[in-house]
Image 1 (cartoon, helix red, strand yellow):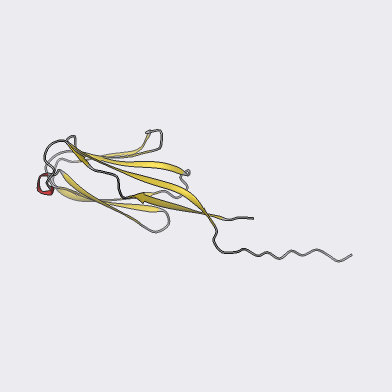
Image 2 (cartoon, rainbow, N blue to C red):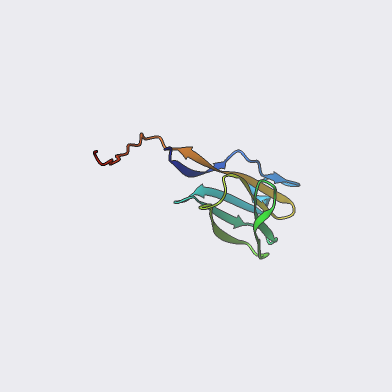
Length: 126
């Protein structure tokens, strides 16, 4: 019997895109993500300019699973996304302000157990 463990992987090479200035001082927001405990992904978001910023979590078919619009004031935001119990597959976290869009790909998968498993069975003697 093979046991499986779930895991969440952030694909760090997803590219933020800007239409306009690309310098950090002129960007609408800055975002960082890191893995938390028990299949959680933490998002730290700093909104730098007074523009509405939208956070969306989408599945592989781009159906929106979570959506939040942040107010039009500079502020720091923190969100925790729980992937425990989510289906294996690809998800996308999209953060946009209209002129700036950042997309991060999140993979939820299964890993086989790496340690050998033993079992003991009891059968009555005849």
